[in-house]
Image 1 (cartoon, rainbow, N blue to C red):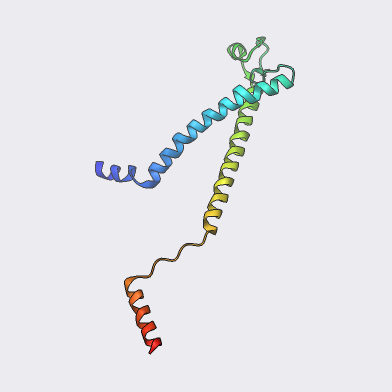
Image 2: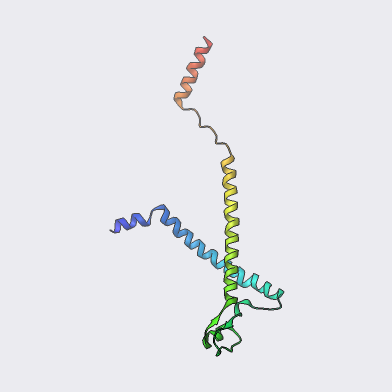
Amino acid sequence: MLEEFKKFALRGNVVDLAVGVVIGAAFGAIVNSLVGDIIMPVIGAITGGLDFSNYYTGLAKSVTANNLADAKKQGAVLAWGSFLTVTLNFVIVAFVLFIVIRLMNQLKRHDDAKPAEPAPPTKDQELLTEIRDLLKNK
């Protein structure tokens, strides 16, 4: 059973998938930082200092807090500002992935467009060519 698991775990597809998950997690952290630390503050500055992550609608009459964390402690809230931030994260990730895949496809097409160099003739082919040339000259 251990040998079978070793074969499964070391197959190329499983290792490739694991690498993709790790890179995807790191990429997600970068995009979250981009959105949370750069894009949303700029949008907040344009809209007059609004912080979308704290926008919510209280669903209970007991919710009177000024920020989302305290409001969640008081009762049910609809955290639509947080949802807006996560949606923006998704759109940015999808767009960046689109750009990356598009560039990779262009590079692949560019590599495919180059004609492959013909393989050098084998020893047999060289001998046959010499024989042909000798027969032509006679």
